[in-house]
Image 1 (spheres, rainbow, N blue to C red):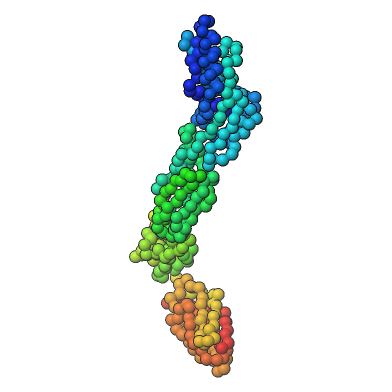
Image 2 (tube, rainbow, N blue to C red):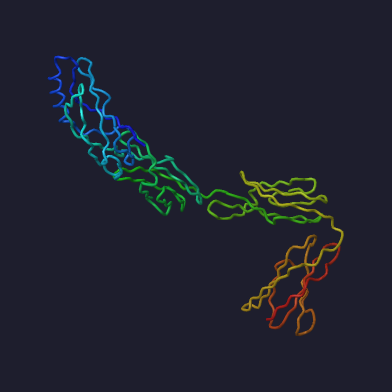
Length: 380
C-alpha cells in the first residue's frame, strides 16, 4: 500500500509567472533547489512502511511565485525507498532520486532528498497504577509515542524488567506473574527510551467455595454438620465454615440450626443447604427420612497398623441414624472376644500385643443395634 508522504520544502525560492521575469526566476529557483536540506517524513510513516517503485510521493503541492504562478514538485520512489525496514532504536535514511523542479515545462534544477523516519520519544505503560492479587496474572501494555505523533503498541518489541522478581516476574510480552505481596517497579525499554510503573501485589482473594459432604442423608432427631472450604486465587484452601453465611432452601424440612454449617432435620423430604461468601456459593442436597428401626450395619471398614507402636486403627463411614458404634475384637489366642468397646466412634485406635485379631463393628441408636459389619483382621 502506498503511503503518501507530504514533505514541506522550506526555503524554495519564490517564483513569478510574469513574462518579463522568467529568466531571473529560473536562476533563483535553480540556486535554491541545488541546496535542498534533508526533509523529515509526514506523520504516519513508520519504519516498516512498504512503498512501491515508480510511484510518486508528493513533496509540496505548490510553491507560489510573486505573481501567483505555481511550481509543482514530486519525488519518484526508487527501489532504495521501496522498503524502509531497519531498526526502531535509531534513525536511518534512504536517499531518493533527485527532486526535479520544472517551471512552465522547463527543468530548473534538481537535488537529492533524504527521508528520515520518526524516532521514539516516550513509552507509556498501562494500566498506570496496576494491582493484582496473588495467583492472578496481569497483562501490561507498552505504547510508543513517536516524534511524528504516531502511537504504536510496542509490548512485544520492548524489553521488560522487574526490579524485584521475589514480588513479581514479567514475561517478554509484558505479562506479570505475582509471587508475593508487596510493591515492585516494572519497566519497558526500547533503545534509550524507558517507561515504568509501580505495581502492587495484594493477598490472594476468594475464587471459589466448596461444601462437604457433597450430599447428606439424615434421620429426624439427628443433626448434621457441613464444612465450607474457600478456594483462593493462589491455589490455597481454607476452612471458612464459621465465616460463611448458611441458608436452608426449605427451613420447614431442614433448618440451619445455630448456623456455622449445622443442620437440623424437621420433616421427611428433600432440600439443600447453601453456604455463601461474597459472590461465591456452594450447595449440598439433603434427604431426610424418619427413624423407624435400628441403623444398618457399618460398611467399608478399613484398618491401619503401626508396627512400631503396636497400634491398630479402624475407620468407617457414618451410618445414618446411628448415635454410636460398638467394636468387637476376637483374639485368636483365646478363641474369644477379648474386647468389646461400647459407644465408640470412627476412627477407633487401640494398642494390642502380638497375635492375630479379628474385628467387627456395629451401629447403635435408640431402636437397637445393627447387624455386624464384615470381618476385618490384623496380625501383630
